[in-house]
Length: 374
Image (cartoon, rainbow, N blue to C red; front, side, top):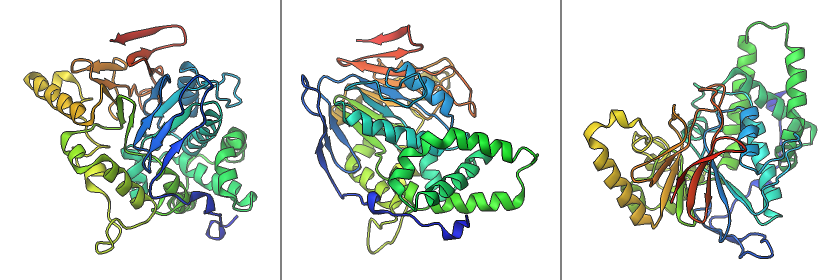
């Protein structure tokens, strides 16, 4: 198809300015309550919480992590088997790998299934999500540009039915990928014209107000589930003073192509998405402790101050690959769970964090659970 002619319905992308939802519940549990839009505060009484770190466009490793977490069937059919579990993914689905929209589609499908069983699926946006909405495609894998083209063609086949295309892309993606690989096997390099077409396709999807940008706008940059805070980089005291609901709303509005201030026009929310100490870029908690030397006590104090201010037991972050695996720091108040599992990063063995009854532990494989914190 000619990409310039691509059309789609955005009716399903109409987003509320705020929300308080009560999701489907298990017979023996109170309902999950979600406050704010994007979701900011979640009450999930009695639920098991599972957190998954950066995925960077690697569908195979994503599936391995979700299977390990006990929420995804291992038969390749994309079935939610987590019951009333609450799953949180910490951002950076985009860049460095070629399966990005497929992963987003998988999470959308799992969210629909989880809500029918008393569970829920949440994602927070990372710095690579905000970079792509800004139009910064420096880390986009050539195959990911191809996927954007293929997805728009699939959308066209479905007469522009966005919701159907987005949810079902995961069901057709691997067949499309194999066919695409075979039909392009004669090309040894990604030529200029193909690149231009891919950039055009990606821009139409991810620019502020574009359909995938609007999907990302449904995600928070800071999410509090019961006594735990989840964010990509790290939450700091001045973020809380600014207001996490305000940050979430401003990032969402920007992604949707809406102005946060009618006098200033469309503006990128700086405190959440720009600068070394923004929510999606901050590495204060996740950097190697050997780099901190005598300053570790100060970081510990900042972490404690932040968690007390928001009323949380712990914070879970991604963003910075942990070469020795997922770990906890600063009196077990900060959990760093980006293990660089994508083949575009470290290609390491997936690990996930499980929280049950306010006790966190790292799951390193299906049979072994370690690093219990009480």
